[in-house]
Length: 235
Image 1: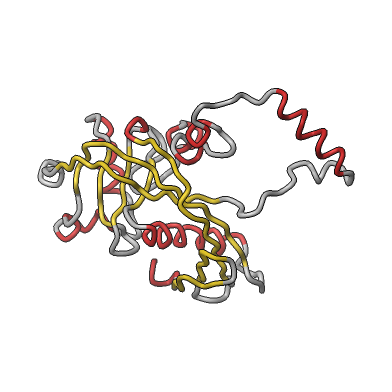
Image 2 (image 1 turned 60 degrees about the vertical axis):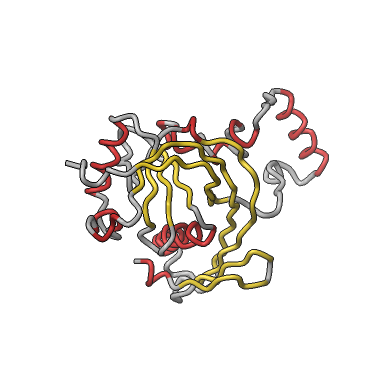
């Protein structure tokens, strides 16, 4: 069924950009338990008594950095995405270009805003952190195939790509390179965590939007607009 589509492989060795939710400024985790800063410090010290050190915290620390690589592959975190129905396996997504991660994440973030804050008359702020992650893998190259197989970039249905992802997973494939459905850039959908390594910070981003306006402002430096995005153009 997919033989004509997956007839090209690429031996990829390079970075992929991973864009995740975060906070730009550290926050006191225990300030809701007491008004005394000494109590906060005591709670932090107590929490640290059972802390398990890690030689690779960007990959293995479950709260701070686990989302960078391992998070999507943990069964409890599986969800429906373009190449997974959320029932059988998880998929890790990264992009070749920083801007592609912005368009992809804004699409999903604005849907969340519209579901949660549609009646709010104020600016909603989202903070993001982008990592560069090394990928060394032979992957199926689907770039350019979207003209013949438009289902690859269908903005409203994942039915075709769910079947494709399931087939690739059953065949033991590492993943695919494919054009983004939201912009002209390229996404990587990774099925095997072992091909990812070398996590490094790239930048922080801040998204600002008003639920009643068709606009998201993106800042790399606080207070300086880097991109202006119309969410309606991503639908």
